[in-house]
Image (cartoon, rainbow, N blue to C red; front, side):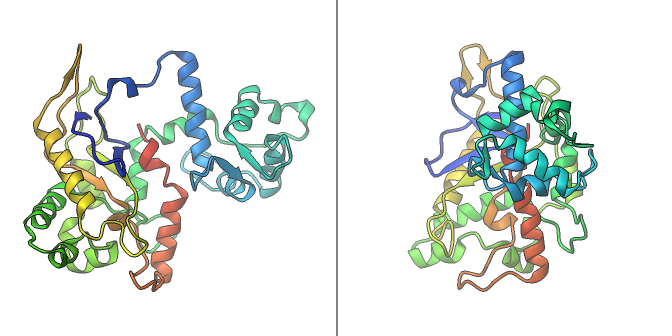
Length: 306
């Protein structure tokens, strides 16, 4: 879905499996070279788990030694050896330029470069991670020995109703009381706010012409404070206004018309979708922390999935 919505404040953008865009010039270039570059950038984000622009040895080893749906893991020794070939200047991290150059040339895996890695993810496998809906389903279900699902998606209808209450509030204290609760509190007090994995699967998908995209929206936004990202619901209101506009208004730019968004979306909003520390700094439980770590390890999925 590509909806024509009014832009949010600079602190809030909507991207991911379901994309809200307003500018035609944001469309990426097409063609084989652009496609290859996009695949390599997507592969890089698979390893760059904290989106710092550089891959550390531990992040690289973690990905290469992880058992996945589409690939068998390498040993730690093989992963370290491969990282050292990527890290051409010995800095201890690999940037995007080094990553692209090494993977494009395959010199890191040539016979002359030393022992070959027995099995590493191919570009096709990494690309599939950002296209297959199963990648999304895996994040919404208990996996890898976890007790709790890493991520839960919020119902757009619930968020919009909450935003209307924030708008109607007559004081700062009322707005603060209506700010989006963290995931733990939502699960305890408002379980109806969440979709189950099966319910997300059943949501209406986009047209064949658009590639049948999922009705999933991912929100990236700045936190206003360390205790709460949106203490007075300001970002929530802007997000919900943009969603509602995109659900009801088709936008045309030249020969291109964006489809309206479906009437119900599954929304990734970090404070409600991931387990959080308490506002006073109380840590997550062991099970919550394990789920949170699993979600962070694949956080790029929510912003790179096509």
